[in-house]
Each structure stands twice: as C-alpha cells, then as structure tokens.
Length: 155
Image 1 (spheres, one colour):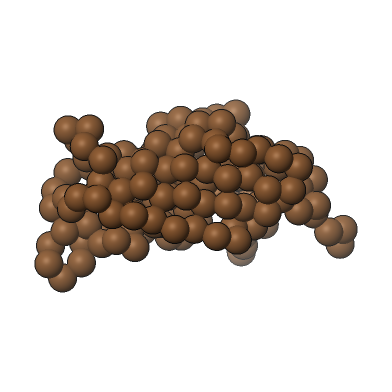
Image 2 (image 1 turned 180 degrees about the vertical axis):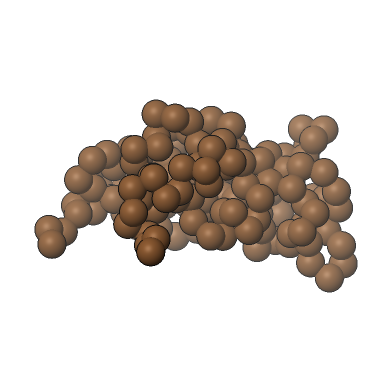
C-alpha cells in the first residue's frame, strides 16, 4: 500500500515536473502537489532568488477561451511558494499569507512562462514578484506573493 509518506513515491512526478535532482530529497515524500500536475506546470529553474516554470494555456482556459485569471495566480503562487520554501531551509516551512495579481493581456494558446524574482528574503517573511509572459515575451500578468516563514513543529 502506497501513501504520501512512502519514500520515492513521487520520483516520477518530480522528474515529469522538471524539478532539479538536487531538490528530489526535499520533495520525494510530498511531490509537487496535485494542482501543479493538473495545470501542467513544468519547472525550468528553481531557487529562492529566482524560479521559472511554464504552463500550457490549453486545459487552463475560462469560458471565453483565454487563459483563466486564476491559472495565472496558480502559477505565481506555485513559484513563489516553492522559492520561499527553499529560502526557509531545513526545519522551517513557508506559508502563503498574501497573493495578488494584475492581468495585462490575454492569451488563447501556447505556453505561458512565469518568472519569479525575490523582492525580500527575510527571517520571517519572503516576498516575490512573478511575471507571466507569452511565447513572444509579452507580459500577461504581474503577481506578488508573500509567505510567512515558520519553524516546523516537532511531532
């Protein structure tokens, strides 16, 4: 019987999502999350200062046939939360406390790229800006996410 705590259970998921091998130990018990898998998010770069991922428009559209605004926020929050968690380090974790986005342009096809850049990496808060662009490099949306950094509780 497999559960979310079986070591190596998510190895294939991590590889498919493009998570660099150096972070597999950190995520092998939890994976990247069901929503990341459903949205088709693929990591290109992962670090506390800068993280980059792509997401297909297809499968993530709203009724008018354009990328759903919430999909922009999912990509932004995924990148910001992963980056903040890497900043938090061992024995600590990141908890999202605020996210906001401004949508500048719509997109109906192709691949969206989210580029997450640290604004502030402190001892208790981490704030990142995430810019989503289309395949032509045009800015689609800008988001900001703040995570609180907390110590893990002992069991």
